[in-house]
Length: 227
Image (cartoon, rainbow, N blue to C red; front, side, top):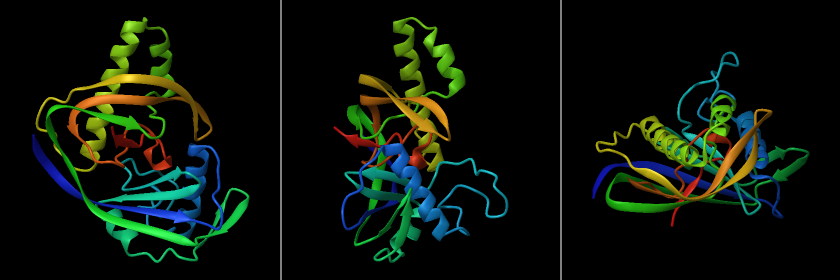
């Protein structure tokens, strides 16, 4: 086993007077929109160029999630530093049709380790992983069950490597990754109906809790935890 990098990571858990329950992707999207309105001039919060509406195509350094009625904001690298220096208490947010005020904010700053393991580690998907876009899902549906499993594993490897590169982590060995158990889950992203995958996978990559892979990670998808 060897460690490739230890990166700054911040997690901010926002709570209000009472928990707000809803669909993971929808609630995370509302949280993202509300925070982006507070910081319109910092594209770390919203993945868009400040001038114009063009999207910045990069691994999001600030990501939004929803957990047990509370909002989670996760920051990496420059995003981790920005989140740690914000006073969140009593911040007012509009989430969908509800206006809430942050009554408690728990901020955790840590160094998250990435590396190569001597044996396979197991990870749980805390939120659905979006592997497919509308185009490659059409091809996937035409495959036989064995080829579908191989294709899911191939895309899993590709998405882990893409996320690592997005954080400037060079995985200097061959990466192995395979699903142990899966269940499909309907998801919506930018008005598109997509398929998400929940379950467990194994890989020889050392990945920290809170790391996210796949499409739409800034909207709460693809969030992993060791296990």
